Amino acid sequence: MKKNFYYVIGVDGGGVKTFAALANLNGKVLATAKTGSSSPRNVGFEKAIDNLAVAIKLLLKKIKDKNIVSVFLGLPCLEEEFKGKEEKIKKELKKHKEILPIFKGKVIIGSDQLVGFRSGTDKREGIVLIAGSGQVVHGWRGKKEIKISGWGYLTEKGSAFWVGKRGLEKVLEHLDGIGSKTLITNLLFQKFHLRKREDLLTKIYSGNLQNNICLISIFVDQAAKRGDKISKKILIEGGKELTKTTKIAIRKLGFQKRKFPLVLIGSMFKSKLILETVKKEIKKFAPEAEIIRPEKEPVFGAIKLAMEGVKLTDNKDI
Image (cartoon, rainbow, N blue to C red; front, side, top):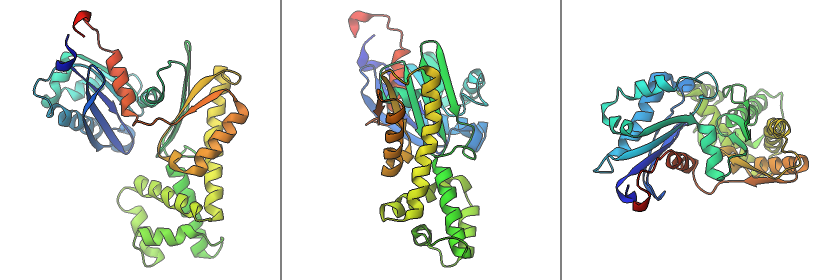
């Protein structure tokens, strides 16, 4: 099997977007594609599969010979309410005729949590903490596997939705005169081009509510950087909430006094306050933790997993 003529595909599915990549058997990424959410929880099963199929179709257009030997699809919600639905997902994908060539090879469906973990390390044991629009912790040690949180953005503390919601609450308290003044209010009105508080309601509740609330988390971080005390308090609290769930996983896996990789994935770690709080709290609890912020996108973890799924039939050719 010659590496130059065979390909793998890795997909990192998410609640907001889907990121797919095509690579050769050397692991070199040749093309990427982005589409909308592939979370059945957020957009429904059929729409999630449609977005997944479109991403794959865009990649297949980049190559003349559709020799795809392995595909790893890392999907959200696969560890929760869509666990055990792998065959249903494959059946739905096969309705999209343009992507049928991928089924000539191996198609592996797994969790976006595993994808995130492997994007930061080649080790099989360790923990991933994902904090984007939602939040989840997943860890592995030997035959033991632990997952904490990941029950949907409405409940996941420390996530972009949680921070954004807290920020919106403080803005409304400010506008009603029952809370302290916060810079988040000015940023919110500027960024959303609002004139009066009623315009805020229209903006938040029309369109994609989840995305609008998550977007406010960015304004909270911007306000914190400019010294807003309310914003700082929200972000520090968010970091501590993320640490709480991670500590449970560390304890249950027996990592507290051992060296292990802790991979941090997600937009919330772009916040310096969130990141510093998590690092500080984790190091106090598990001093040997190797905290990793991957330099590459999580989809590279999916490429690794796809390559591991390749069964090489002619070792001398590669």
